[in-house]
Length: 237
Image (cartoon, rainbow, N blue to C red; front, side):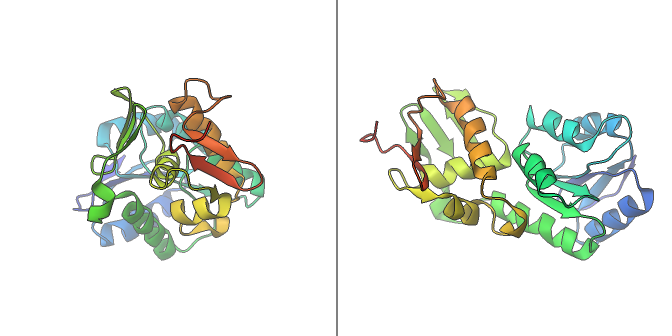
């Protein structure tokens, strides 16, 4: 494990190829990030607990514990943004990674400069920058506080992944408005060329599991057949 000092927060790099990990770390440190590097999947979750990263760059193929399992472990307790690295470009891998809670997916070989720009872009999107984004949204006991980036249900915290949070914010910001999958993608994932629209359905399903009393009969996130989804405005049943 290696660490350097920066002022933009710590990025955890989980990559068994030492040359790749060192190159990514160098480019991140030039942009003011600190980095923590681990080369074994078995060390990744403990490293995340220890360094409290603002971002995780995670290779899919790792010794002992693979990237899918690590991403799933992170999502049980954290909404830290995750970017997956892989040598495979199949659509099923992209869907699997994004559905598991990853925020981006980069295929090797890649440009380290582009990788860093993706990290910065994702961090910009998840950090509220406009006064309009600081108004608390609430409906029937469900509350979303953009300033604290916290969601509660009847006063109890609801842990959401970055994807789930962005989807819920987009829907709650326009109650009663039907949003297509394409619109949700454009609002939640600006750099969406690598994202499949059916990933939205997977995340909606997981979000309903967390906020609905009965996910099969949702009261908050409603399906608009043939179009997409909407957030209840109190008039729809």
